[in-house]
Length: 101
Image (cartoon, rainbow, N blue to C red; front, side, top):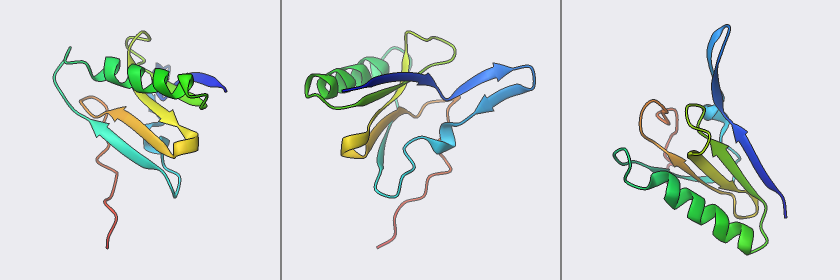
């Protein structure tokens, strides 16, 4: 089991750089976008999901908040092709499209 922690965005000398559009974008991946006000538990919820995946022996990836590395902006479980992400501003997942039937 591997646990990985990384940032998908950050401020650089060239301005803000974002890789959020590449998170959980595999053909079989499913992304749950979690929205809610500040302090309502989005990060804690995702940490709990990640810990459960770790306890089950699954590889787990945590996306850390560039403004507060103790906070989680997302968690991805590769074996389940499932990710969870904080969908509140300033992060935007408006680039996502719904599958057609």
